[in-house]
Length: 213
Length: 303
Image 1 (cartoon, rainbow over the protein chains, first blue to last red):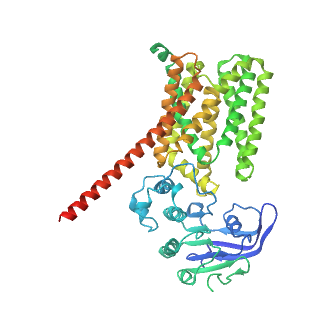
Image 2 (cartoon, one colour):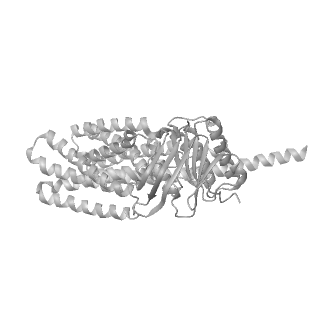
Image 3 (cartoon, each protein chain N blue to C red):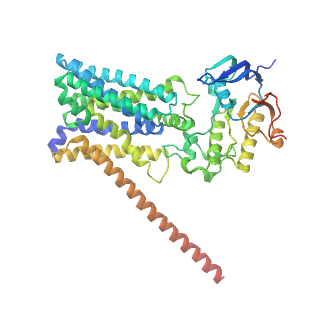
């Protein structure tokens, strides 16, 4: 029998101040699947991700990720996007690999073009930054990617590019899965690209995607 | 002048090696938004140095008066670091205010220690404002040795450190894939360098070299990590050497404040030169493009 890549059993979690956000969550995600977490503001979507990652210790119940730390990539919401270091987008990718990169190795993911690489991180648009971060995540060849609101503030073209790359990521190799918090959910045409399990924290597991109507 | 240079040879080399080490560490600390925390940690090291001097100087054993203050500086800076790191980890909204409170507390503590041990009165000004000219040959050689080790470590790991800084700045947490040893590597390097630097070259030199080059160079219009790191290190070395030589030539000028003034001046000149050159280059490119377009238009009209 296939072992789940992520599993929770009767998980109850909350904030450090003791506010309970969700009770008795039970779910299993297998390789090839996308877990889509939706729900209203403050229902605990980001806290669930932090609980899964072991960063939030205010929980009861069982959580396990059967993926080693080095094969797991987490992209949180971008709170503070300006940085002191004058990095170019290519620098961001280079330092994540700790070695000099050829342009081809960066461009092969199809998210960035040659003219993007010299742009300063601090002057890049939100979409360019997210494409860079996704490229950076893919370069680490992860088994599990965990995203917190990756589609926020993206135009239609950037969103389509991100979705397409995520779908190829799951299809290329069997031992991969994605956990994604997405406030707006996925559009019907986007859902067809994935084997999706939706967790609406307002309603429960396998609820209808808010975008699919 | 040449005699003076040969007399202070080891000291000049010590200053020229300590400055890029501090500048490169400061770039990473600034990227992690740790400038205020670093001020507290440096002040903690200073309290340790003063206490060490006060406690061990009466014994008049050279090893004890050198190693004792360093060990206490490490203990105090380490404790300050662990305490302040909790505030950073909890993402306290008022963490900068807490840092200011701690800084003032440690500042008073330093002055209190110097009052308890009257022999420290002369040392207080020296530890704060530094005086490279009073460094002994042995101290200079120890500082050179430790700076070389730190520079080697930084050269080997600059990409990893920068990646960690990037993730701290962006996500507020260190890379999830980093091992504990890798996470602690930079912290230990900074703590050791800060403690040794405060003891040998003083608080002012340490803090200036940490944040002046990277702070002023962040105003540059150009981008590129390697360029920023190399420029910060070169400016730190040049101003250390230049400032020290100026203070040797004009004996009324204190060494460290002269070095700091040279650093600010050199960084400003560097930025202005770069800006003038960039503007001139942009104008030149604009003219060339206009001329090429004109020629194309003329040849198209003729044909």
